[in-house]
Amino acid sequence: MQFDVVTLFPELVESVVHSGVTGRAVERGIISLKSWNPRDYATDVHRTVDDRPYGGGPGMVMKADCLLQAIRAARQTNPGKVVYLSPQGVPLNQALAGKLASEDGLILLCGRYEGIDERIIALEVDMECSIGDYVLSGGELGAMVLIDAVARLLPGVLGHNESAAQDSFFDGLLDCPHYTRPEELEGLSVPAVLKSGNHADIARWRKKQALGRTWQRRPELLRARQLTDSERVLLDEYVNEFDRSTELH
Ligand code: 4FV
Image (cartoon, rainbow, N blue to C red; front, side, top):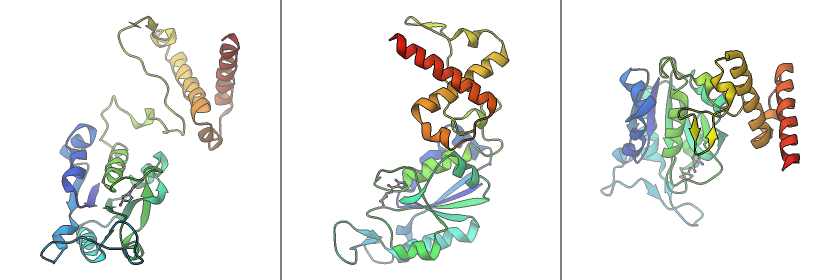
């Protein structure tokens, strides 16, 4: 999968493939990352990429001309969708990451200052995407988050002992708790079922924990998801145990 990123800070974005799972994905040739700097297309002596907003007000806006050239240069070699990272975009979640992972390539557009000239969006942007309801100083961190979330869904990126299927949100639920050695940690032990070797009981416990934690922490995710009968039984069990445990305290 080819990722092209239009950004004033290529060194920041490129760091996402300098290590870990995404770094290995580049080594394995599963993903590629190329950045395009609009400043390289600025023609004035100061290589200006921003200008004052029409209508006045604080801050600056990224100029259209050099941004358009950078986007169109990226389009020469990447047939993929142009995604503009902005707070006005559709929220990035696991389902959207899954959809984007089926694309041949993506051109990620990173804004700076107050944002980009709106006409760029009309002319070149296929999708606006937000990584969260907060304001960043640039779209670069959003682009890096998107690259990481999408890359790990591509075949061959995660090793055999890593699996996206175990990830949170893979099936719309939060993740279950994880434990590793030592068996005792400052008086805290590992749930016995996880040491039982009974894989059916372990899978049942993990699903029950995932359902229960989703019910406690992100109930809106449960409402968005149809529970199977067996999941309903597990969740009821968890809720009853939780109620009993709170009554005791
Ligand atoms: C953002 C977000 C974000 C807005 C103005 C860059 C900043 C500045 N991008 N999800 N939240 N972008 O805050 O994606 O240009």
